[in-house]
Image 1 (cartoon, rainbow, N blue to C red):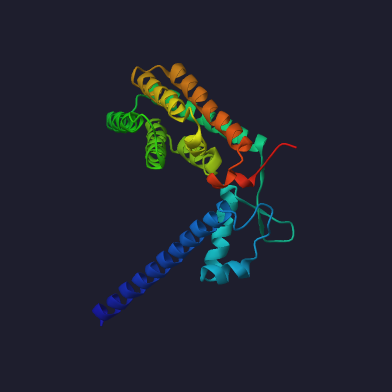
Image 2: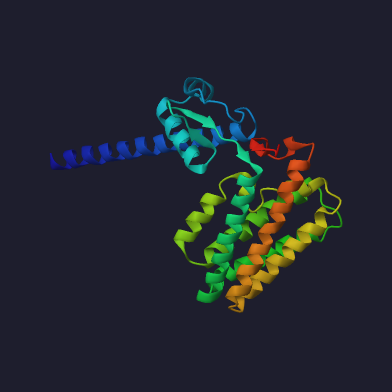
Length: 262
């Protein structure tokens, strides 16, 4: 009897774990789908989220939808309303500019700590290899859409590795938070450069800054590493201004959430 009882307990625990994993999976799927709808403009800035219509559209229950909405509020894409519910947030150019500035400040701090504390050798090796692959992309005389896409992926990987070098969970978490909005991330506005005559030249400048900050970290030059990353974020500020001046806003997901200066 004891064996049978233990077996029942094990199956019950497994069922609970399965149910929990299934619920979490539904929430994550809902969160990803809702984020995509917001950034694609299906849920425009300022629009109130109709929970029931979202339930019907995504085909999931209200519980994971509510959890997903709360997560998107924490990310900053939604805001809670006084009478309950959520609405899609909009942002001023100043909001986005300050978010980019904050990211540069945090990345600068992370780079300085990495230099002062000494970055793990394995992470430094991965970062060098990542930069070598970026060099391969930029070696082409002209960059097509595929090359830009590859650059974005590699650029994000390099910035992630930079965050790891500091060995600080607190800083990494804050960097993730401030970078959660697409237009505040390291590659948020790179796509704006795609149709620019000087696109490749700007990416080469950014790549040179990548090399310089990695060198500063390896040589334990904390102040230099921090200054380079602060300067590096200024390129995103330039891209923000370019995006807002562009007549083709549809090319950049989420940029319609940014309010132009009046």
